Image 1 (cartoon, rainbow, N blue to C red):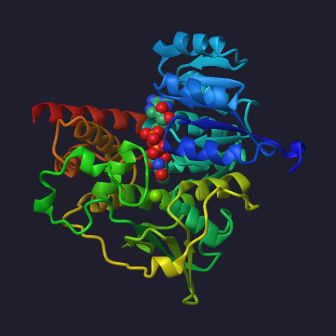
Image 2: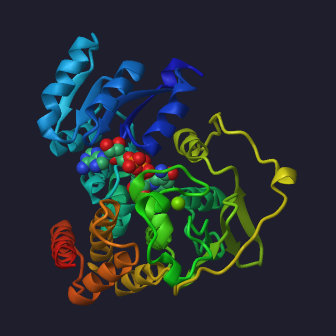
Length: 395
Ligand code: NAD
Ligand code: MG
């Protein structure tokens, strides 16, 4: 590994779960990758700890009121790291010479702006922030294409599909693809009826059986909204119509997704449920690099099960299909209403089953408009948030 090949990586969402997995893989290859920009939302002390460990050139805290704490902390640690704050700084660093690769791992629509900035600047984007594709999929993929930015999915299912296709450029028809089978673990409440979901708590919802993830995506996995967002994500990443995407519940989470070809052949990608594999694929592609994850012991695992999703107990999946079919601003509305509903659920303000009710309410109340500009999408996002917050306040 020669220093001339050194890749400079900006990690947006460095203090989160994906951020930690990214920095773990980077630290295994010090001559090949360097974390040059680390960014977080509000966790300034956690960000400072990461700066002491990884010594980036730049550190950004999105919450501007925390700027002085970051700057002083860096100074006290004797680091040369430059302190920045605010969303404009995120956008500017995403597009700057400080990095050639951007790991987009901010949670929620808050990640869209910096992801778009990285796309417009032609960076390699390791895209974990699926909400940006749901909110502005066409705009983001078009921007990336025009600027020659490479988007590599950091979602285990989409990485699986990417690996089965062996190239992000393979157009699906050209590659002879008949359909995509997205696997889902089923989350912590798999097998429960609607009635049994009435009283579940945030602590139960975030205790995912197979993956260790941030609180928002953990709740999304429990409602199956995560799989709905992933169907929309796959549609944009691989240019495949929704009718050719199918969801399969696979509780062992070892088969990360499958691609079926026109000749009847089906390829699956397998591995332990550990995002470091996915991140190593993105960082190294088209080469393979060490991730710290061991291989599968299939004899110890014993079996692989598959079942259909229960759309009665988990209506969020159907809501996402509905929004994708409606197109235009509907996916932006779905995403925004879901973000506000999940946040209220995590704060104990609404019950688990109110999440799909609020999302359905936003989709049926707000008219779907053609989504040709960022302004239209962001305004739909804002209206859906306001509507949902009002509905929460009224409960
Ligand atoms: P997390 O909650 O653990 O981390 C979120 C990160 O985003 C933190 O660093 C936080 O400081 C930062 N952040 C939050 N709000 C911000 C804002 N307004 N501005 C700037 N930074 C902000 O979440 P996570 O589990 O790491 O997930 C991150 C993204 O990756 C999500 O979009 C999620 O859907 C996706 N993803 C995660 C996993 C996983 O295994 N964790 C798998 C697939 C996809
Ligand atoms: Mg996933």
